[in-house]
Length: 237
Length: 281
Image (cartoon, rainbow over all chains, first blue to last red; front, side):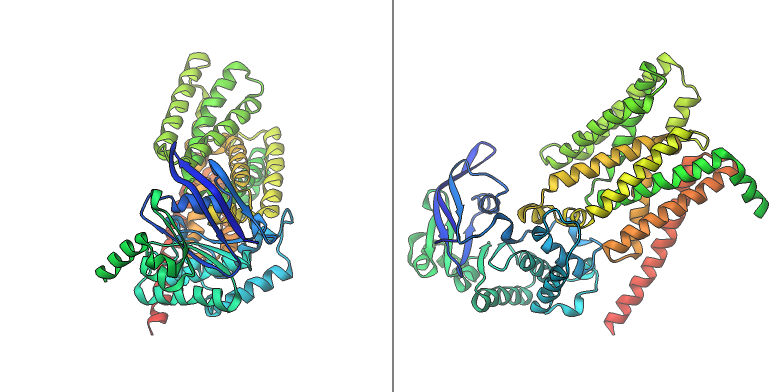
């Protein structure tokens, strides 16, 4: 059974519908990239998958015992966060909050999980540093560690490489690929970068009004919409 | 020197001011850390003006218990301001400015038409060291117990919601409830503290300690603890200054806060430079 399944889903934003009759499904271990122009509804769809916005029509179902609060999420950074006085450990630990329910304090297991995920992303040397003193790439790693604290099954990444330089961007993509391949974590990523999406993802969802595409990456390259956008992208490079 | 301090504390009104002032400052500082980091500092300022308007109207309607009437009005205003700030369509800052100046204008008009600009109104605007009654002290103590218990109990959730609301919501934390708790407690603190600090200066208690401790502290927990200590320290020393030089209470407390902010900024800058130097080597 699919981890997340969208059936005939429509979303509207300020009374204009942005997504119409969308169908796709994500299975355990998939690496799905959601691409599309600005305003094509990528952020709206992410909110829908997270359950922060309800669909105007159709339904989004979760399978394989995936609970609502079991989604690791890497949101886009807000300006307020960039100078936030918090240690890396504090930020990562806050990813465990969803498993606490009404209990007010973190347990030993929570703290151990935070330490494990800090080690997993090779940011041990930063654990005591302040979040605001880190570089953009380091901050993204910290937020990724936090997302892993929230879920071992699925990660939702909203444009995780925005504002990073090319070398750090490559690092980030490799890290995400590792999590997907070695640890079988399902990845759903929103991206502007069609070239890297095609390089790393197993499935592509291209939101493009009526000409929306969903399928494997190989099919995408051969499809008319993929050919058009991908070829154009290559020419630019 | 020692004698002066003993005389100072022998006065009932001064002991009350110190207890009430420290507790109010402590609550305001705890809530302030979240408000400042969430870019909601202006809510505190808006609330104090709404509080003034509400108190003036309350005093005109029922002089015996103005606080009981003002508190629900300010709480309602707090929820309203929070909604405005969350709604990106309306520009939050100008909406808050409109509401706060409007309530100030209504408050002053009502006050002058009914009782005249008497000492009561004056102390609500600028604060007064002798304003705290026995009843006010009891209210202060109850309020601070509520704030401290809720803050400790919800500390981890407040951190998560302050740092990243969208992540908190996505992983199933009901962020709106915690925002409302913070707004509710802020409304209570502002209304109760207004008598001593004055409505024009009460928001400084929310903003200064957080900003000051952020100059130096690098972890959220130390920022919170440091803000609480700074708040109490500044309000006690401000009260002593106010007593010794007969200066207005609210203003004296704000001035001690300003001095501490300057000191912390200088120390923070120097230590940043030293750290940067270390890393460049």
